[in-house]
Length: 144
Image (cartoon, rainbow, N blue to C red; front, side, top):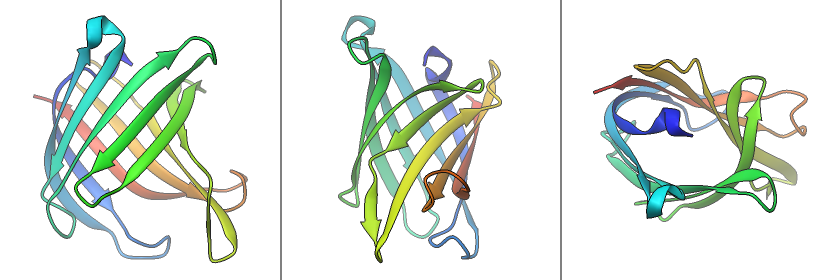
């Protein structure tokens, strides 16, 4: 995940519900290698959408299971755990499955269109085990 290291300006495009309206916000992100190169730390802030938002994640390669693991926490009390690898040329991390309104829902984040100066990130949702998915948030990154 070295492609992610650095300082970024971000534009967030998000919605609360799969059919809901989109809202935009801007923010910043700092991603650094820590612990002798064994982990990656992310610090994220955005001015919305809605109210200001801040969070941190820690990612590391887990050789015993052959995948990346990431833990995210934020100022709204969220805790999310992810596991994944490169799929179809994009770093893809899957969140834990959750039950909502008698449906099993899963989220994933996809890092794609990576260049030395930009990347596109999507937060996708499914309730049919990835037969279909709905983008819930996108973030366009520009290196600072």
